[in-house]
Length: 170
Image (cartoon, rainbow, N blue to C red):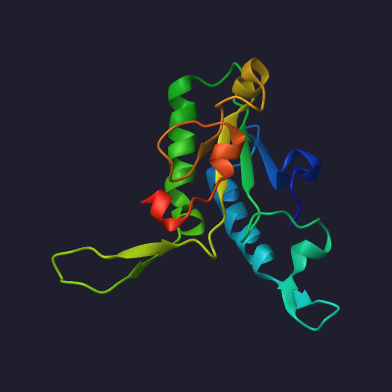
């Protein structure tokens, strides 16, 4: 798997981020297929010097305080040739077509059949963030320009990357 860029700044508490820039040169199917390729890559393991299984990607990039797969950041760059509705349509299609990669698995708990009891397991999910190049240029990467799949609004990067505890998330 080859990202357009891989960024990290541990001194600023920034974990490794795999960055993809969508300049609208690839068909949607190709764009959506990248998510599955990343998931396969992040699942690859190797043996550590102690003989334990570890993710292969961690042999190339410094570990961070985040657990699980590293975040995947998509920067959409429609330029001036694509209107806002076409951008929304493309983002929505990618979002819906890749839901199994970022949404996690619901683990049903115990309780009555009338009560939905349980929680979501994001162990094998990739945190996916979307933004646009014009938002980044206008406000900078520290502003609320990041929309994490599954969240309800744009957030600053630390909030978009946060994995709240079950109680806080609830």
